[in-house]
Length: 379
Picture (cartoon, one colour):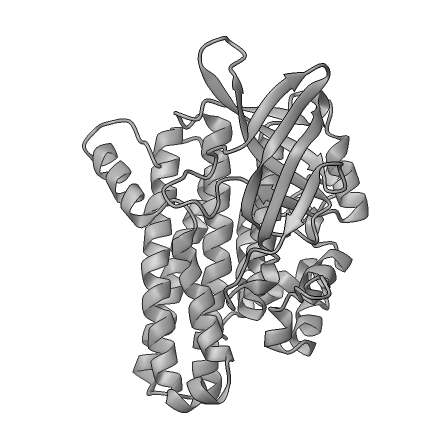
């Protein structure tokens, strides 16, 4: 049965969540009320089910699911609520980054215990939304002070801007070895003085991600909430594995969105068997590629090779999603398109994978050089 494995995995870790999501009409699942600033109901529901602790290690009170399970869960959620899947991507991605930076003695990571205990959400203030930017590129101004940093700048869009409990952002700091600069991750409580939220998102697609502008006006970040990631110019372990986690989670989310369209084709028996199976074949091929990527996270390949594999898979997923979403819409027919906003909404939401870094152009240029024997660089 189509999506059976994914929904079974979702039910294993979050029994009842799928049923509760279905009770909310699709367009309500995808809504954020700019007038009342009422949170997206699916984000609130996900928090009530303990969603924020999905990737947090068990010793901190988390679920510690495997990358394969996370992949299945993301696809299942994406098939029900694109906005929730994309929002969850940003939270889980942040958890994955912090976990990669854990020191051997686990010092300073009571933060995970807080997130797991209280089901706190991280927003992700990286370079999302800026054409040509890498995920880790920083646009924040930083001033070192006694005991920490003063940070100013703006992030737009910032997913989970209204529901976030903790904001994360990337900044550039002098490298610990004195050679150039390195990326650092900072964690900022959402109620910190100097944080301002401004309406930004005007598209009808993925409104429920709460992706608005967050402005930081001289916000203080203490030393214990600053985590060094390494050089922005090379894929060391932390940067490489964080990049792979992002692509895995984002691709799975958008695969779920296109799967929702194909599921409608099967439920309504549109087209002929060979046409329906052709759409499912493309999606299941993508799922197999993502499963291979998920397994690579626990492997020992060179970092450049792992990142290159992630980009190859990302481009494959993006191409297939675009093709399948339109093919499914065509089989569903014009009346399905005009009688309800849902088909058009799912098409637009599935297409948004292309707007996450890396862009197709920058990825192709970097892979071309990599395949010619040069070091991998993805802008």
